[in-house]
Image (cartoon, rainbow, N blue to C red):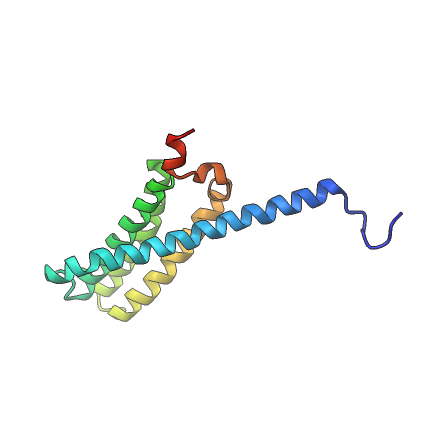
Length: 152
């Protein structure tokens, strides 16, 4: 018996290392999606502003949710996700904002609440979906970019 090992086997160490690696892939995926959402807002937002669609809370929230969803969906497509996964993630991104528009329309919450709480709920919903589908979002083979898939 060696001191300091606590009965840890090589197999256990490998499983721990693999779990940490998969958690890293999962976290990388989340960061990439947030960056893609911000890029979507930066690229598409000026178009809606120029078209005059972002003057009120409803227009701003709907165009912003659309911009983030397009950016994220485009990046997921580039990374090789299928339409079902893109559709699921798109839904959990848009639904929180849509749900908050009802109390806003009734005068129960302000536009600031819709923006702030909507973004918070959207991130929580995205993380929840990614945890439910942890096997998919934490696995590198499901994340191979299209360029790599073409040359396989």
